[in-house]
Image 1: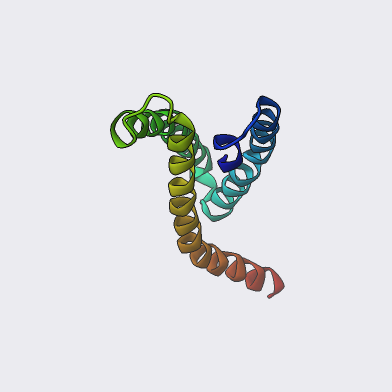
Image 2 (image 1 turned 90 degrees about the horizontal axis):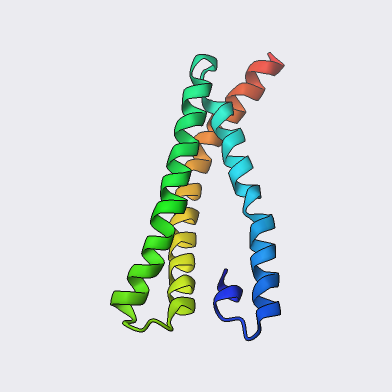
Length: 120
């Protein structure tokens, strides 16, 4: 997304969007798999539904709103959409990294516990 925000030509911007569109499915599928792994059987459908709703609320609701807010109030320039997009993408990537980093240890404990249980 950072490459898209500062692309010099429309073909470079289109290539960046195509790459981002292709790669966006990887973390979504991995997180959905991890959620199904740690959730008890009787709650998997509800938790999957909550995951989809919250992902859509944050991704589709908050993302464009943050870009527009940065463009209007932080940069105060209608032509600074690319800079706003880069700022939001970079800051949300940092937030996502922190959340994933904090979630890896509990997931690892669950996965190690399951593998030890299966071996016994």
